[in-house]
Each structure stands twice: as C-alpha cells, then as structure tokens.
Length: 395
Ligand code: AMP
Image 1 (cartoon, protein in one colour):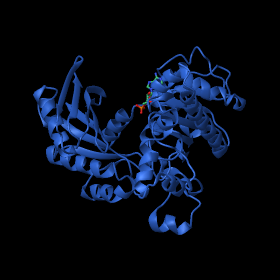
Image 2 (cartoon, helix red, strand yellow):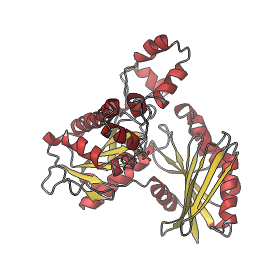
Image 3 (tube, protein in one colour):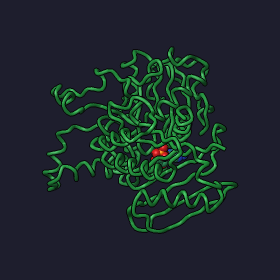
Image 4 (cartoon, helix red, strand yellow):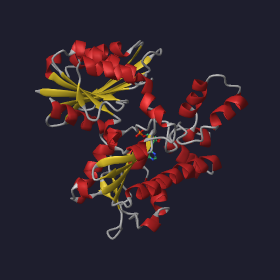
C-alpha cells in the first residue's frame, strides 16, 4: 500500500502526518518540539487513539527523522520503510524560482539552501530534513511544496515595494507572501462549495491563526497578500507586529539601548502583536477570556486585530474591484465566531450580512445570510492534506 508523508519542519520543530494514499486516510501524525534544545518532546498519535510521548534530547532535525521512522516501525504503524513512497516537504521560501510544487533533486535542495537568506530560520532546517529523508527513504518521491508558490502570480504593482528599483533587480527585495498552501486550498474549496468555476470568482481568504495573512484571489490566482518580504508584515499576529513604520527601528533601538538590528527584529517577531499589546498572551483564547473579565488592554488587542483584518479586506475589495466570497480559516478564523462576527459587522456597508445562527460553527459552512451580496464561508484549512495531494499528483 502507498503511504505519503506531509512534513512541516520549523526552526526547532517538525510536524508530520502520514497518509494512506490515495484514500487520504491519516495513519499517524505528531510533532517533534524543542529540537536542538534540552528535553525535546516527541509525540506520535496513531491507530485508535494510541499515543506515544517521549522526552529526550534531540540535537538536530536529522536525529528527529531517525527517531520518527524508528518509532513508526516499533509501534507497527508501518511494517517497513519501503511502504512510504512519497514525502511532501513544506518549504517556507521559494523565492521567484519555484512557481509550483516541485519534485526534489540535488539542484532543488541546493536552491532551497540558497534561498535561506529569505527564511533564515526555516529553509536551512527544511534542507536538513529533506537530505535526512532522502538518505532514509531513497526510493520515495520527494516533493517540495512552497509557502510562496501560490503568490508568484501577483503582479509587480502589488509585489514591489516603493524602493529604488535596483533593490528588486539586484537583490530580489520584494513581497513574497506566505501561507500559500492554505490560501490556495480554501479558495478552491470555496469555489466548490458555491458550485462555481473559481475563474469567475473574486475571493478574499483570511488565514487567521497564530501567524495570520489575507489574500486577494482573483480568478483562482493570488493577486495580493498581506505578508511581505517575510511573514512579519501585514496583520497583527500572536507575537508579530504586522505592518509598522520602518522609522520605528532606529527610534526604538535608541530608546532601548539596542545595538543590533536583529535584536529589534526579534522583538517585532516574538514579543509584539497580540501578546505585546495585551500583555496577557499570544493565544487568542486567553486574550478573549481576559477581555471578558474586563482587561482593557486585552480588549484593545482584540479590537486592533479585528480592525486590521477589516482594513485589509477593504483594501482587497479595491485591489480586485469587488469580491464574491470572504473565507475564514486557521485557528482563530475557524474557531472564533466572535472574531468573525466582529469583523463582518464592521464591513456590512459592502453588502456582507452574517447569519448569527449559521456562524455558530467550527465546521465547513456558509455563514452569511441567504441574500447577502458577499458570501462568507468558514473552511477549516488542511495544509498537510494539500501537501500530500501535491505529492500524489507528482508521483
Ligand atoms: P493556528 O496557528 O492556526 O494553529 O491558530 C492558533 C490560534 O488559534 C491561537 O491564537 C488560538 O488561541 C486560536 N484559537 C484556537 N481555538 C480558538 C477559539 N475557540 N477561539 C479563539 N481562538 C482560538
């Protein structure tokens, strides 16, 4: 039987799902956390709710792969490694080179390493995982699925920054976006749900999770997206600033006595966003709870989050000169009916009416009123399944 891995390697973590293909049944899934840090945690879920959890030092991603494969065999999730004939690797930065998911050969791995400048925490780790998998599973087809591919259809008017043009031609300094696999998946699903050809639709996809981004999808193609050169730009996120004025960098470095720009960027990435404003947590559930209990900064963080989403929706209605469907997805988008309600309430002028009863869901559903000019749909994202499908297509 054919089995396909979807691997999502971060700087110190590795998420995985193992699918039986083509049925797309999930055989096993789990997470390796704190790679390269003491007391790494390995989890494996399989079968009828069986769960393995190991706490041990996992010094690098290569060791994480060794452990994962040996655990799958030990717990008889698979009889032999030969059963795994496909591996899809999520890769954060594909630059302008990778316009679609690509079968991996030596040159592709090399390109992924060369693109590390664009995703210094992710691409090097992803290249290590690809090489480790190639060694362990020499007969499996390896496919790289890039976060940026879906956005390579953006026109220059939307991907260029208003900088000296040579910075783009010489250094490729431009907007690349991210979360492409998710935006693509939910946009296509939305078209299926309304029973129309995606070519005839203008869709705004709101991926609202710990990382958050919004994309304008016109005729099935990404034409603009809120993340930028890196995933730091755009919306307010769990710990990331989203859009800010670059002049704040020298101003704050001076005030805080910070000497290295990288230290400042680290604060923008890890201590800002909903966490920084609320002072409570980066987790939306904690912030919602605190706001309900009367914490004003928590309420302010929620209001800022929602307001930025509304502003991007407004922008993208202008970018596409219209919109047929707005999609909500990812942790916050899928699960928080309050967030969806607050966002849609503020853009009702455009002809967007939420049905509060239909909105009371976490599942895939149209949540706008029947006569609403804009259809609003809740769609749980499934990036791993999309990765496995790409592998199957290219196998
Ligand atoms: P993700 O990055 O897609 O896994 O999303 C993580 C975010 O989703 C966190 O901020 C969670 O607090 C948020 N989230 C998950 N469930 C809910 C919920 N029921 N209400 C509000 N936020 C939620």
